[in-house]
Length: 463
Image (tube, rainbow, N blue to C red):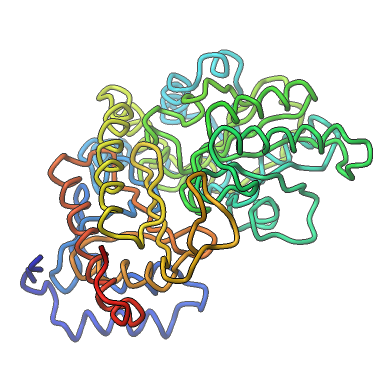
């Protein structure tokens, strides 16, 4: 595929200078800037234009934040309206017409059983703060401190949220197995693997010698994002709801990345019909601006004033942009559209595996898609898949694919336990033509990365 290079917006030296100064001034903890050395200067919809004049299709979307893509007209209009009105932009947690409109629109999208009896807490501007608020809430309501979380989970980077994520140590969290088809911890996959995961959870909680104190809550992602795009089986998630309800354990659904139509329903828990006790929401609910909340059953609302606060929990511009985004997704059926288009993209990507044995698995839900890359020449891995042995993941190839995608004007992210899963999070406004272009560019990038791999070149051509 030929890659056209538009005329630079700024001289190449200036573009390189910006990148060089970023590397010198910003911390060693920076992430996306390392794998995506671009300088965005303009953006609209799915397209980003860099300072060097190159254009990219953005399948990162602010890690799932941009439900409507960059600078959508309804979002810009909502922000301008607040600015032009002279309304205060900083109000702490005071009531405002903007907040009232946002809350009303948000409640209109929630599962009715929750919306009819819900309370909302506005948190600091990031999803991780909302996770912290959820933990405080359930601990205050139950008088218990222990939490249940899952292998492969990711809930944020602050102390409590990170403790409930997959790589934590020395914490008050019991780790439970998350079911997988491709890399099943029980070596079975499918419904059998999900059933075994549920059985283990029940056994551990009911075993008087299991070493698990009575927990305050279980936190689960309906689709694990950073963990490698692993959808929770609907039946298994219903079992988790039954297990927690029967034992008076609050169920927290982390919908930070899965919410606002991303997976094909407005909220990902709707696929299974599960109504959690607490929902953690951020990213897309702010319409591209920082906003995070928790919504929860009123019976849990037992904490004291100031038990969770934050200076920037009253972000008026984000509430206006968020209300406009929620309404646009709801009124235009973008969740259903994401389900249809995502299924089409999944089918095309799965078909690629016939010619690319380095594709170990293609999975996802709606427009939240992951392609796990493996090294088929290395032999079977340590675990088995539903269809047999699974080759080990190939993070080196994944990095090469990401860079080849960038060369072809496609921005993708990596995830999973070994960063070997290529992740696609396009905006819900993705067109049919853009969806085709994404798959075509990814397929071309994969072929190029395979050809440039030293071990694959030595082994000869693939199938």
